[in-house]
Each structure stands twice: as C-alpha cells, then as structure tokens.
Length: 488
Image 1: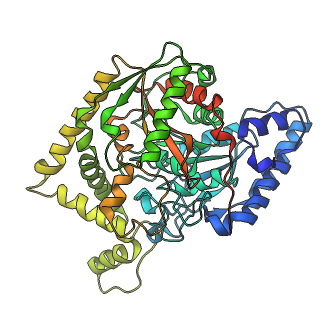
Image 2: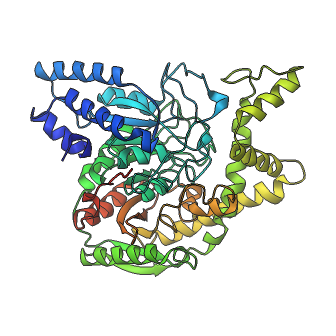
Image 3: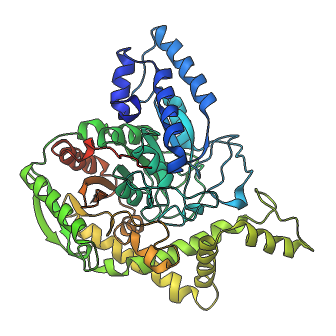
C-alpha cells in the first residue's frame, strides 16, 4: 500500500515511529495528485511549495525530540468556501474571483495550531448550491469510482480528493447534505456535526441557520480525530455553543450492546434504488448481530422537508448573497453606464444559473405579501420536523437511513432538471432543518461497483453515538478496505 492510500491515524503512527518522514508523506500525496488530478478535478488551487516547506519544518522539530499530535504534519484539503488569510477564496464562483480574505476561519486556526498541513482548496458547487459539483464556475469534478459519474455535492471536490488518495483528510460544509451525500457517492466517511458544535466563523455563508463545517475522511477513526480538533465554542461565532467537547476516541467501541436504533419508514420509499435499500437493510442486520436493537419508527413530517428546506435555504441565500455587488468583493463588470447598471451587470455575469435561480426564489418568498405564506409557514413546518426527531430520540439512541436514494449518477444526467437534482438530498436535509448531527459511512456497492452510503442520525450533541455505531459497523465489515480504482 502506498502512503497516499493510508488513513491519517496510520500515517501518524508511521511518523511517530520514525518509519517515514512528513516530507515523504507530503511528497507521496503530491505525486498522487500529479497522476490523477487531471482526471478527477478535485482541486481549484494547490500549495505544494508551502506544504513541503512546512513538512521539512516539522521533520526538523521531530528530529529535535518534539512530540507530535495526532494530526501534526498530516495533509488536509479545504473546501473553497472556508477562508484562509491571504489565500484566494472563490466559492467556485466568478463573482469572488480574486478575493483574498484578510483573516482565516476559526477551523483553519485550529488546524494550524495542531500542525495539520493544508495542501489546497477543493472544488464545489458554486456557493455550495448543488448536489453534483457540476455548478462550479471553473471545472467539473469526477467521481474516482467511475469518471463518468458525479462525486455528489456540494463538497464533491473534498470527497473526491479523499476517495482518490489526493488527501487523507478534508473539510467540507453541509447545508442540506453537502458533506454526507458526496461522502456516500464517493465511498468515504462524512459527518455533519450538530449545529453550533463547530464554529462557522470564516465560512462563507449560504444559509446561516443551516450551514455547518464538518470532516470528510477515509475512516471513522480519522473522522473522530478531525472532529476533535475543530469542535468547540468560538467567541467569534454567536451561534457556536458552549457545550462540552468529549473525547471522541472513547466512543470508538466495536460493539453495540444496549443501543436502540430506529428505522424511519419515511426514508425507505418507492423510487429509491433497490440495491441501496438492500445494502442499508443488510447493514442493520450486522448491527443487530453486534448487539443493537432495531425497530421501525415514524417521522411523519419528513414528506414536507424538501419544500421546507428550499424555502428557508433560498430565503437565507438571497439575503446572504446580496452583498456581492461589484463594490466590496471580487468580480466587477467593466461594461456599465451607471451605478445601478453596474450592480445588475456584475451580478448577471458573476453568478451562475443555479445561484441565480435560488436567489430569485428566495427573494420572492421574502417579498411583501408572500413572506408569511411561504417563509413563515416553512419555519413552522421546520419546528414540526424538529419535534418529530425530539420525540423519537426520547426512546431511541440513533436512526439509520440511506444517505442518498441513488448511487453516483452520470455527469449531465440531472443538471437540466433542478427538481430531480434537489431530490438527491431528500434523506439528508431534515437533519439540517432540525440541527442534529449525521454521519455517512460506506455500507457496500451496487452491481456496477459504485459505493452505497448509510446515514446515522442522533440527538443534538451526541456525535459520540454516531461515532460508536459507525465504528462498530466499520470494524466488523470490509467495505472500507476497498479503494477506488481510477480508470482512464
């Protein structure tokens, strides 16, 4: 096995035992990038020179006897809507081309304190609006398992980078499934933490009441390690909560005795691929063998989740993206006749079609005469969806669902049908509306050898339960040991 194939915790052991240097790890990663990146298209920008320089500094400190932390010297890829001081941050949009933030996101500062090495910024759907990473203004990202399919979205670049061996770790953001859905389609681990668990300071906003930064990793152990670093209260983010951060490693227990898991009937629906359903249900049998108790439950307001999400998220997007007008940030048209004309032409040329679609929808639902009928009603339904989860979690430790109703779909298959594309997130958006944590793990493959993802949901701030169930399943199956064989 090559170094680029290894999860971060195994790389840490090799570095700690002085079997490899950090420079060798970084060099292996960039060799892999040079070999496959032209086929995958996971990155928008790379910093090999900076990464090698940091690696050499770390190797020198280790040679002088310094003890390293679990992710010291480990390479990580960052979704291109998380700000890094003096590093271009575009959100895969023309309107932010040339924007260099004057500060770094809190999660970036925490990674730097740990000694994690940032190797580059990953591709994404523009402003995180999409489920396939086809909405990027700069390139399309391909799924390592089949280059003709999408990696999912909007964190498709981060998921593809981890799946292809271009990075052992990545950060993504999840507004309606944008970590979990691409993790499922690319066969890796992706977690959306509880809303407020991880600081959003320095995350370019899509929908502020839904957005959350989270890890994308090769296995559950790495997910726990990365979550450990980025979690916690941040005074720069008024929505981050002062809630104790446990030692997540204590949750990595390979059995499930005493755990009660619900199977929501609304998540096993007509129209989902039969192979997805079979693999998820087969996974629940493994969990029962490990000691878990399974029982069917109901979340009756699930059927309203998609409509609710696309009213609330677009309304917040309309408000958040109003600031991009050609004055303070990035792109500005040169073809203008007056100030108002400059605003119009800048936004017309700077935003892509999907972003415009969502901003127009959001502006409409916030407009006078329609606000209460649409946005107000959606907020009330959101409360009902949250109450469904609250009720179920009084008697159950977790819920098991498919992550996506399908495996990875062909590039171009859904791009001209927005409603069909929106349904790709049908199983993930409820967790964002309710603010609860969710994780996607690999639970098998279909006949075409494409990954299938299983989603685990838990009550707020019970990420330890997610990690325990995910780890127990992972350690008692072999799916995570397979890697993508990139063709072409």
